[in-house]
Image (cartoon, rainbow, N blue to C red; front, side, top):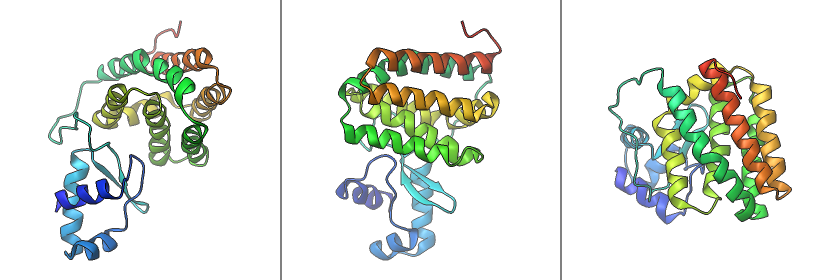
Amino acid sequence: MTARILRHIQEEGLRSGDRLPSTRALAERFLVATPTLREALRRLEATGAVEMRHGSGVYVRADLSRLILVNPNRTELAAETLADLLEARELIEPHLAEAATRNASDEQLAVIAAALDRAGHVLDDDAELHVANMDFHRAISRYAGNAVLAQIIDSLVDIYRQEQRAILEMYGDRANDHRAHLDILTAMRERKPVKARRLMAAHLRDVRAVVTGSSAR
């Protein structure tokens, strides 16, 4: 059943962030019982291929050509992993912001903006805000022009999903976080790649400073 769902995603050309038909519609399409379909979706969610959002639907999470997938059996990671995760992102994402500013089409920038628009409407809902924020970062990496680095960011977001949620809760200032994202987007729309890089680096550095309790500079 999982293979049939994956084949459907490929045949329909669905990408990360796209929503699948309802579980009922998929069950009817594949001529299986709805519980059978849901169990297959849960197995795919465990590997990071899809995400089941309560009250919203099922969404494609990972590029199916991606080689790095989530280990569904991993245990909780140590708290110090949060700082390591942010450091890793700080090394990669400023470069991706700069590259996406140079390479992304206006239509692709609109996709990035759409993620931020969603975030702006759910600042009081951590679950939805987390998804929108991560979609913003994923989209930047996807349109930077380097498929390997895009896969790395996708993998970091998926593997450390719980840690990313913890970072959001520890950072606390949703409005300031959103403003930082908007500033990055503005630099990208103005086609100022160096500024976009600098703003992304400053944003991630500030988040890491709050999470670790250290100085941002």
